[in-house]
Length: 349
Image (cartoon, rainbow, N blue to C red; front, top):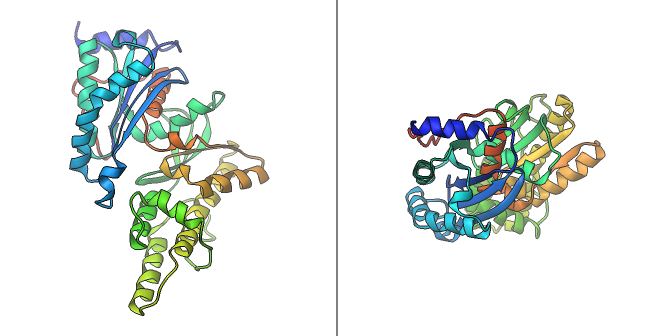
């Protein structure tokens, strides 16, 4: 039998089971991650971050990220197996992020996963990074079921989705320009905060006041779309005007004022979407979901509206492989086919 036929036959036998092991690999940006998942349980979850490497450049350098993925991926796989007290003989499926992300970084994970799956004659499942973020919630909320509304705030993505199933997601609102995470990074750079910008703005904002008037896009309109270019530009103009006059500015106040507007529109639109969809459940996915102001605001307003707000722990908001393994588990339940050996990375997925 050809590899694909062997993989498909093995995958078909797992669809109605929960007791099999998935080895998942994530390498879409600057974290190399490997996890082993069983059903909705994390058996091991290893992450090697490159933040300190890229900090001096003010952002992720794709070529450097790719080279560092190559250096650590094999050891991370072995470490994940060791911490789970398993061997390759125990693994039933290999899952890998194949998009979206940095092309070179994705190729490291995809190439490794293909070689591993082929050598072990195991099914290989290709996972969308963004769907992985959404599925992280299933690891925490064991009773979570479709449908629900998801506020997706991950890297270059800011969307509100009606999630009907793993394969069926409806966009209710999306950014028309910058994503929230991009705006955080760009504003941080302008006010002199280091990479990564999101956590630095959150930390700095705690010492500031919301005393700078900044614009909110689409105020009063009925749609659920976002725009962050005007907010970002307003901060840049505010700083540049003061610099041109030789005046000092309060970094903490700028951070607090910016964060208040950036997070405020996320909360407003997300809660509107839940009420409109009548799903009554809102889950959060993606790195910006670790922002404390966003989390507290959603919980507070959700409680007032009697809505269920599901917030994964911060470690599962940022990039990790556990979410990829869980997405694989959900995809298998819905009948996904294994990938064949022609699988390629898709940076614009």
